Image 1 (cartoon, one colour):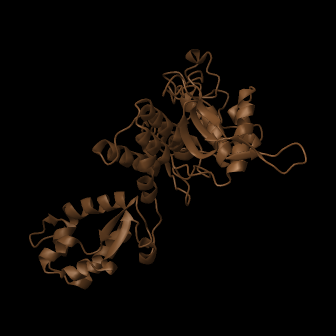
Image 2 (spheres, rainbow, N blue to C red):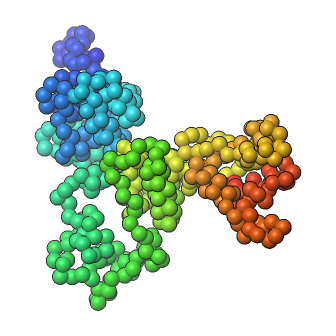
Image 3 (cartoon, rainbow, N blue to C red):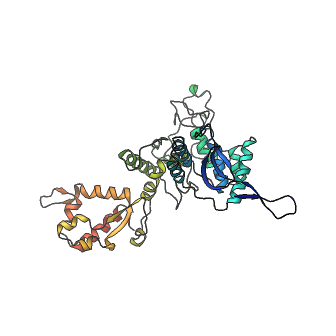
Length: 394
């Protein structure tokens, strides 16, 4: 319960509204703080569609939590609203809990910020103005404008990046097929991407360094495959391959679950923000991020925590059939958590014939076949060398 301070000299406090430190459904709609309606009801147990109001809801949540809240919560709210409309309150609140938004720490202050933000929006203010007033990073708003604004212009078909959102004026572009955007500025006319008078289209490379062209990023549909299915892993592996070619290196604790702050812009930033806006895709992020881990010491590897990592046996478990004691194989010294996708790559490499490893008839054999019959010390050293080969171990 929140209280209003009296205007007279008395010390009594008047209760003003039911207060909730977490999002809840009420007959009025989805509510947070001191009764502030994030999304109004549109009939009994029916939440008004968020379509066209995504930025408003994101601005209100960001104001309440005092930080830029990721667009992925919108998908949680939509799922929760569906369950609520079906009379399943339990599942509805599970979906809200999956948003990752915990109870507001300082409820009175948070409720005040929320009510102020609601007032701004109700009186014609923009969601961006709320972000700016609270000094929050507006890139999530940028992402929503890009992915939810059907009026935003697109690059015409037949041009580089055709069909993608753009802030450029492409009027008349059909008569100018050679037109491409330029990164040149008045202060830096020689910046990569600048055009000469002939307006010859360049071939931008990865990171605009005139290297091999970067192909389009994997598509991130709003409704994607279920977690831990083949399509889910296909997307995750495609994302890793594309980000690797783009030269992306994630910052520590920067990403889908904790924010994109500090992430590079351009196509890589657009892809990561698109993934953040899709609830299903953020589950892939720990596996994507871990793949780009720098080489670590064994001690550092053992600090890796799931999700994103698999337990890897330096001397593989099948060695038990080759006479190696199980006690050694399952020893903590022989097990390290490594990036899951690197684990898959290593397993694939170990099982394929390799011209560097040959049998007595000089035929290529797999690394696994090569290591058979070797001593524990040889196997262990071989396992460490494999981790170094794949950039897992220093």
